Amino acid sequence: MNSRYRLQAIRLYKELHRIGRDYPDPAYDFHGKLRRLFERNRHLTEKNEIERALALGEHIKNETLALYSLKKYRHLRRIYKD
Image 1 (cartoon, rainbow, N blue to C red):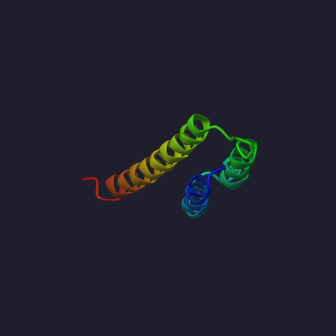
Image 2 (cartoon, helix red, strand yellow):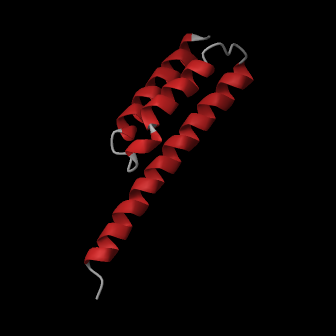
Image 3 (cartoon, helix red, strand yellow):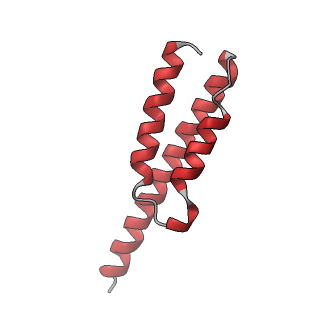
């Protein structure tokens, strides 16, 4: 794998790992699934496949952050409801 893609993958893994600390459902095993996903894609060598896997990781990151925002919004709405 190109060193540029390797650094991107490591950065993405670290970001997702940090984000996963606050995952609302502990039974989901966010960190375990994250690790298995990255290990499963470890063998990728083609540029297109690597970029597709990194794009999927970015999508997961954005969806998880959106889930957190929704959770915060619902909590605030519950607290300040008239």
